[in-house]
Length: 303
Image (cartoon, rainbow, N blue to C red; front, side, top):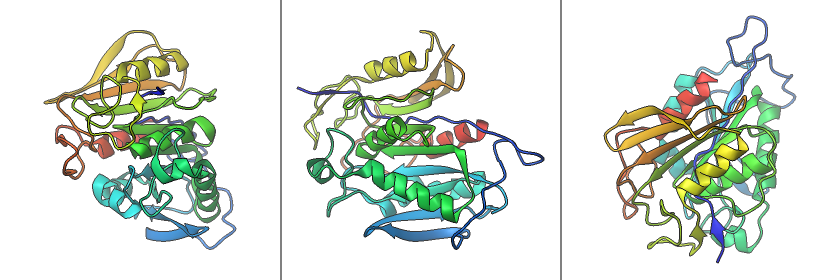
């Protein structure tokens, strides 16, 4: 039976400064297509839609970070806007938020061995995201060193695949996800941020096939997944607590190579849900002790 490492939030950040621009920003390349202004835009590539939220604070004269937010299996782009509540945070932090749509009438992502229509048809979702990124670079002032992917469940798996296969992505954030069902050839260090509930019945904390799993795939445990990322980022076996409140404890590995971070947020009793997001009926407890959207945005801002 296949073993897959739990998918998570994985995300890596680097920043560069230029002249008198704020830290983490640089002068943009010239925009050669009609630019996008602040607000929510719906675009398509070969009949596949994606949403782009340009923050209210966007300045075309300064490059901005980009975060792709990927829905879970059977979800959609508009639902992810509501689930995460990220647009308001994007406005605050000056982040361009992108919400791609999976393939099929019941949308899924081809994240390797999961999931659904996209996997069965071997949809080129890596190529789809590369095409979206090319559009963004033509129509917006994008900071090429601050591009990230985040997702929940099948979307988190896809975020991880993007970080492995597209060097433009500096990392990924995975929530209630799993990984390692395809070779990861990433050579750069990455900032890995993983949120996982101990009572996730779809991608279990201790690995294996979840009792309520739609995919029927045996995932590796959270511990195995984090150990793999510690090794890739050359981290020590020591950790420090970065956040503690109620049901949530976050710990970050120490001694990682330059540019690498590995952080795990354990949600005691948490389900297959987006922490701090809208509750998802039938998928377990959604904790209010941490807001994953806010937490990951602040991590981006720190780098």
